[in-house]
Amino acid sequence: MKKDLLNYEVRDEEDIFRIASEVTGLREDVLKVNFSIPFKAIRAGIRDLTHDHFYLHGLGNFSTSLYAVNFHIRQWISAYRRGKITRELCVNKVSALWGIRSLLIAKQDNG
Image 1 (cartoon, rainbow, N blue to C red):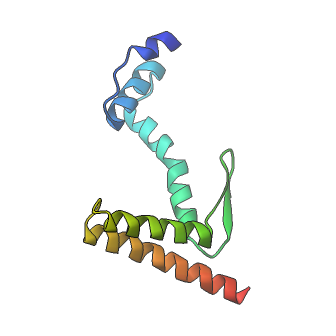
Image 2 (image 1 turned 60 degrees about the horizontal axis):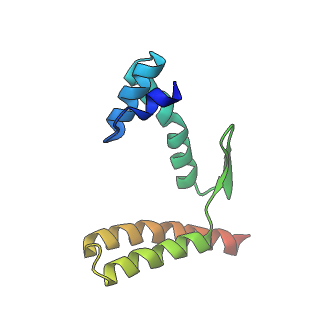
């Protein structure tokens, strides 16, 4: 079975679901829904900054920190200065992170 999986050529996400469908006998749409549920929960947990962290059964604890947000802000600005990304992309990413940063700082100040 494992050697058979090595014979598949994967070019994109759709190929992964097609192969998984062939191997498991489940429909692709069912696999996509079941695969996306944990990631939607992680995304929702990260966006909800009313808690320092959140737990997903079977996947573990997830959290974000001021240090991590500052690190990513520096990474985006550095990429822009090196000419790797456009100004618009940098502004969009840093603006989103800055909002999270502000919330984390306010949370720290309030205890």
